[in-house]
Image (tube, rainbow, N blue to C red; front, side, top):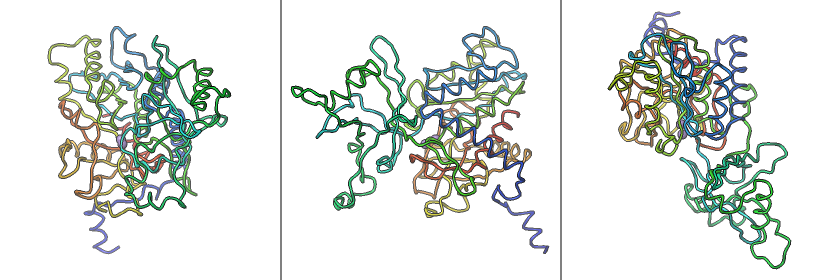
Length: 467
Ligand code: MN
Ligand code: MN
């Protein structure tokens, strides 16, 4: 080896593909973990389903609803479910909670189509549902793929009907149609953003007319009759429903080498799963370990299940109350002493679209968990931008545990941008940094990740809770 190569090894920030130098045992560990991850994705496509599944996993690991605990002591494991859509979990540390907590926050909602409040109509012999999209989607991607309907219909008397149709092999699926190329000359001149317009996202749900020549809207009537027999609902019950249209695809291993996961909703169920399983591995930590599974991140974190709400503050106050140490302003002090990983996906470099990335500061699939010191757009606007001191703390944690990581930003300067829940907790006084798994085709009906990075995120979150 020449003197130069030696020096290079010593001085350069050498980035390498994590699959290299990985023994078979380690590779199998990664594949096994990702099989469970894919099961998790198949068991939950909506925030309600993810919360339900996470609660089941937590209870199986000794967690209790905090409402059922009068007092708390170090080692206790509790959770709080907020309106079936967001959730907080904690393992109480033996160090005083006054010195801060270690938080990992992810979100369970993913881009999708929601039904409009008055969704059902008939047109030229077909019945359709009108939709409104949720989060940032490329609308054309949602046509001509199998779609499922998940959610709840709540009747006036409070009775709740759970809907999940399109996932079972024997279920029907639903499709949003697109124009045949032969007649699409005019449509093809539209900008890509309007290739399919919002009001063209109409879900095709039926075509058989009700057998009575005296009625109008026979197809709509036939659909309502089917729904009434199956769920006991009438058209007015749609007004108080939350029905989400999601891809009917299952999560699958991808590539001849099975190195990747293709699935709907990996943003950000990937960080829900990796942080949740990390927490399940924690016994008697020094610092109280907390997982946040938030909702509504994709539409700005507003609402009483979004991170902007004060429900999380109430949860931490409850920890203080039940530890018997609460006093005025203690909550603020706890937050100011706390550390947080805002666990959310990052844009992985896609060689086909490499022009949006600045190669030195992009995240690459297979190089480990991606850390973003800042997010935002147009000059870091709206980003909480982590302190160098905290970045050093996280770097040290990752390097001393031999966990592969990369520090990246979201695309080239002034090309776009994005945000997460990081700033919300940073505003409370916590040290916060964004980190998560690089994704290809983010927000598309089928997103791609590297199994190596999924496992790196799990290891990183576990290490963080042990600090
Ligand atoms: Mn996200
Ligand atoms: Mn997103």
